[in-house]
Structure formats: structure tokens, C-alpha cells
Image (cartoon, rainbow over all chains, first blue to last red):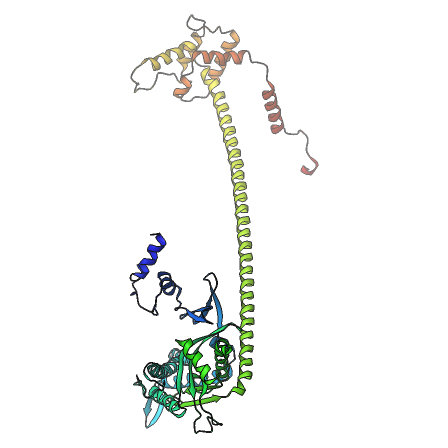
Length: 281
Length: 260
């Protein structure tokens, strides 16, 4: 057995001798994966392979960098544009700047030490140095806010995702009948509940969820939230025309408003799916 | 599995026609709120063209950034090279300067050495001149006697050697008496030599003689006396030295106009 094979065997047989991580930590399942595959996944920070166009195109995804790579003919990784990253080029400063200022002021007001004197709230005497410390802390409020919000969105999305997967595996019609893993956070639970109600209103029958897409023509990749067959709802504000059994692309967004880039993103997913499977029709 | 289900759905229901964007509110006011945005097939083309524009712009920006990065890298490399060249030049310059300084110091040291040599020579000559006078006081016999007393004893004598002082009159007389030729002194002194010895002995200042001065051999004394009696013709070096001495010690007999 060669030295290289011995090295690979070490990775196959239980973890890395140079680090303390357990062999299965942070690794996607390796269905029939070789030692080389395990080695690449562990030390290349990439996921397992995704195959497209009847296995003629192979992609890998770097979770840390959130980047997609196409596997070249020689096994080399060629970076390709991601859909979300691509739409990120649209300038959003005109909405983000006032919001950042708003949350900074809110945090500043929260942090200022106050006292009630004769029924009036007053600011406690502060040295300039103390005030500077508080102001600098308030300056980064937009980061705190983003973290908090993304947590709520993430929890709600996770609940919906779990429910959809459960339906795909257990329901003959792939319909979400109940929500599973309902979050304890009330805001997150409310958001998940809103999603469940929408599914019921549109008689959603799921086809796929969290699926990687790739456009060979335009060379971009991404992750589509879901694909489902839907009917129109009774709300004219949502579905202006009645329809039945429309194959629809679904994208969950955690946001305070609907943004232009969401439309561009979903169009890209639609294009990639139709490019890969539409030509077979 | 994924491929199969999508392929099956497309075959059964036709191409994707609709898009639903489902918004989950996130701010304090919006958190927990749900909103759907439905786009139909007639909006697809416009949206996708928008996406393609973003894609092209992203690629252009990436390309330009890559170019800028490479340019910066090149500039950094060139600057580094320039710095290294300048450093090497400075190093060479320092090395050269060091060599020059070393050479200058060597020259200085050499000059100092020459100066010391000259001073030593002058001192030696002065000593020689003084010695000439002192040595003339001793006859070879006296010196031979003192020499044998010094060299012959196996144990060093603690007492002062019995060397007569220059101002010692009996010694002078002894010198006078021993100036006659003897078998132990093969030097045949002439009357002129005798007079030179006597004159030198008289004119030599009173002083203590050192051991070195006393240890001159009779042959050496004979040579000195011989040289004084019959000095050899000056050689080229002596002539040159005399000329230099003349030049250095020359004082004009007339006054220069500016001296009034």
C-alpha cells in the first residue's frame, strides 16, 4: 500500500490525526464516498458534490466562503457566481443608511443612564469620556440588530423547512398538514404560522426544497428554497387571476419589506431549473 | 431523487410559471408578520434581464478588481525591487566608505608610526651623541674589567656596579693612564684619539650611567673611536639628510620687506 493510500486510510478510519475534531463533525453524509472525497471535504471546506445536467456538471459549495465551485475536467475547482452574491451588487444604501442611523439612536437612548427626579426622567451626569464610550457602543447597533433579526428569520425558516421535508417524506401528496419543530420564540412561531397559512391557502404540494441550481448557459449557481405546485388563493391582492396546478418557485425571505433583488433572484432560479429540465419536454 | 421529482413535476404540470416570494417580517414592528408576493410568467423576462445585468456588472467589477489587484501587486513588487536595489547600493556604498575610512586610518597610523620612528631615531641619535661622550671616558680595559665582573658572576650582585661616575676624577686619571696600548686592548690609539677621548670625558655632563651603556663591548668602543678618528666619506643618504637639515634650519640673513 502506498504512502498516499495510507494517509487516505487514516481519514477514512476515523478522523484526522492532526486535529481533535471527531470524524463526523461538520461533515455532510458520505454516501459511497471514497477516502479522497472525505479528505477533500474535510480540508477543502467544501460540501459533497452536486450533479447537474445528467451528471455532466459537478458543483461544490464552500460553506464558510458561501461560494460555489464547478469541478473542472482535471478536478480543479473553478469559482462561479452565486445568485445571492450577484444580486448583492444592487445598491441598498439609500434604505440601509437611515435605518442604521435610527437603530444607533435607539441604542444610544437605551444606554444613556437616567434617573427620575421629581417625576421627571433626567440624564445622569456623565463625563465626556463616559459619553464617548456609550456613543461608540451605540454606533454598532446595526450589527446587533441584524444578528437578532436573522435569528428570528432563521428559526421560522427552519421550522418551515423541517415541516416541508417531513411532508415530502411522509405525506403522499407532499402537503404540509402540520408544522413540526415549532419555535418557542413567539415572533418566530408567528412567522412560521404565517407561512403555514399561506401553504394551506394555495394548496401547496411540494416538489423539492433547498435545492441547488446551476445554469450552464450563464454559468451561475444558487440554492432555491422550494418548488411546489400551487393553486390561486381567494385573496385578489395575492392572486389577481385564478389558476390551478401551477408549478411555482417559492422563496422565503426574512425582511421588513419586499426588495427588487428578490425578484431578480427568483427569476435566476427559474431560468436555471428550466434550462436544465425544460429542454426535455 | 431531486432530479427525478423536478423532472416529473415539469412533465406533469408544465414549466415553472409562477414565483412566490414569502416574506417573514423581522423588525420589532414587522417580526412575526407574513407577506406573500406573487409574480406571474409575464414578469419573468424583465426580472431575468435585470439579473443578467447584475451578473455582468459583478463579473466586470470582479475583473477590474482583479486587474487592480494585479497592478497593485506589480507595483508592490517593483517598489520592493527598488527598495532592495537601493538597499544593496547603500550597502555597497557603506562598504566602500568603510574601506576608505580603514585606508585613511591606516595612512594615519602609518604617519603616526613614522613620526614615532623619527622621534625614536632622534632620541636614539641624541642618546648616541650622549653615549659618545660617556663611552669615551672608558678604556677597553676598564670596560673589559667591568664587563667580566658583570658577566662572570653567576649570582646577580645586589650592590651597585663599580662603574665610575663621569665626574670621578680618579677615574679620569685612570682613563688617562690606561690609554696606553696593552696586549688586552688591541686598539692602537693615536695621540688624536687620546685627545678626543679626554675632551669628551671632560665635556660630558655629570650623570649616572645605565647598565646598557656600560655593557658595550671593547670592539664596539673601538669601532666608535675609529669612526670618530677616521670618519668615512658621507654616503648619499647622509648628504640628503644634511641638505634637509640645511633647508630646515636655514635662516635668511636679510629682512623681508613685510618684516619692516
